[in-house]
Length: 163
Image 1 (cartoon, rainbow, N blue to C red):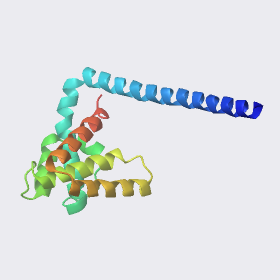
Image 2: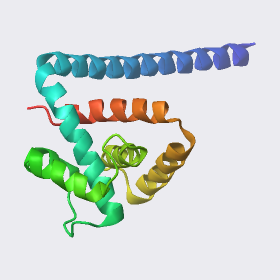
Image 3: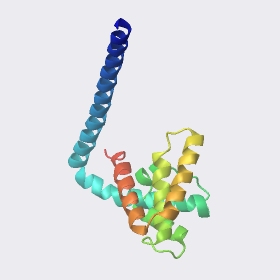
């Protein structure tokens, strides 16, 4: 009987620690979400102005990686923060070579660019695997779903560039 009580006590203690851990993890996520909301409110206008620039940067980055129209190996952050907006738009137009910025081709490049930056902190093998999954998802998702994904990805990505 004592062995059962001891085992039950240990199990309950473990559950207590797990519950505390998960509550703490939920609190950390909640704090991050609150901070992101604060950033969005504080920098709402700047954030709204950044979103199209980040989208164009993502599209050009991925397009240039695939089509190699420009020999420079740009970083998305440099495209967003350092390149003139008109020059960036011209580079994207040249790279798309007749495809509209609203085309599926541009949308797909935007997704690839955005997720490439989102995964930039990962080890190379993990990033490569995740990018493979992104490419598979692009093929299987509807245009509407891809548009929603790009909007969400770029909205979160743009937060990084708020000053």
